[in-house]
Image 1 (cartoon, rainbow, N blue to C red):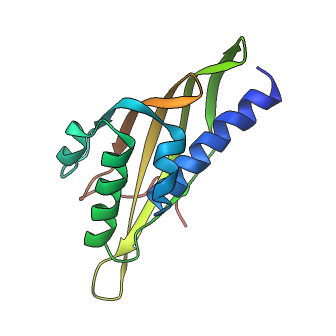
Image 2: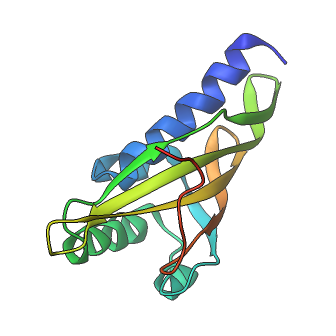
Image 3: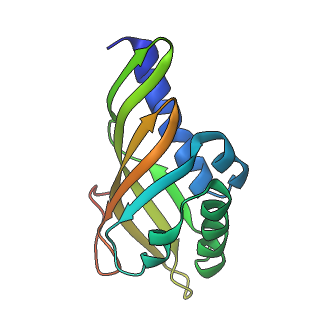
Length: 142
């Protein structure tokens, strides 16, 4: 795999993270017009029906409204398995992330997870997200 494909994959994941950090306009730029989200953590059922970039942006906006100081950060090394056929990039990108937010009492809640992004024609068409959930922990010690 060429360096350019790895950079492309890491770049898509970075924009995915920025979307989750409130840059909602990115939804229209990185998501396919119709996609599938597969979230395993409790309380994430709202994502089951999201299929459009505008719908995802709205759910993320609501997610932030419920969690004070919500912040996502990529962690660890990205796994990038992409190919370019006639200039069209497709494949998978996976990377661990850390989500943190205020517990409302001055503390910080931190949870780890891993998102796997399926990319077709350069856009995200499917996401698998697995996290430690509400009773979970972080992968990395700080």
